[in-house]
Length: 327
Image (cartoon, rainbow, N blue to C red; front, side, top):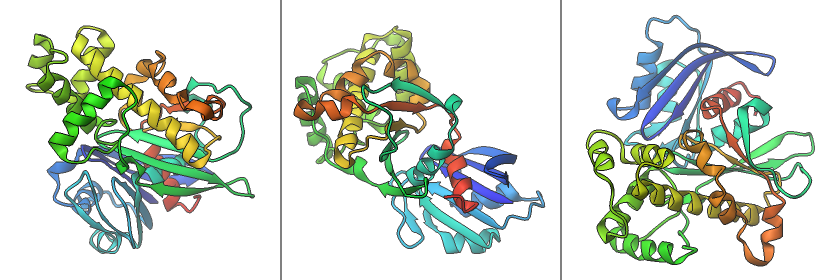
């Protein structure tokens, strides 16, 4: 039996799997509010209590770098050590990986029904490097490099913490505002759930746009990023529409950057918690327009497809594939 975990800054998913061939069979799954627990091991112990499952191996995808089995997450208050987790939970073999490492590990196992084609690409499909870009609470990145045996090597990345580069006049003004607020502005500062909150503050404080009364009322009790997405997709608040448009354009630009950075001609895969919820926004055109706007090398990006991972459990499944030794 395998324990898989997809830890996020907001929610953490846990599941017990068995493996049949290369297919996962789930036996127990739960989703918890991350900040209601003092540690990952506390959550795992509570999840497994009185189940009787004989868990031999486990893997957790966590938001942040993992070095020598230890992670201090950028979006979680937990300090995680795979050896201490193994000892506390009684799982003999436990591994911590970056959450994008886990998500990327699931990509080779995705079925056609698990993905939505956002942009089909102008060139032939090739088995080149694949890039994964996943906005949720934060923004994750990862890569898959093809090997000679038909498999892929997963390359983790913290590239979302690289500097944000504005591409139009409004983004230049936003950059100036955020730099004054935060000192330094990363891509994650804009293209994530945290980013949508920062975009809200920029538009509201500068009076470039004014949120409607219904939106203001909604964010008193609900998450700002979620409400921006909701009102924007419904088309009921011009402020929210503009905020989500900025988000989509910045994310599209970053997706194109990934293609050029590693010649990721095998495609870009959008994962994380946000894309499945706003899939229609990615299909409108502004995301793709920013994606392919790369000057003299636009032709490389134009040839490269973009897919949206519809399966919200992909990161969890990837952790299970890692634990099972299939990646």
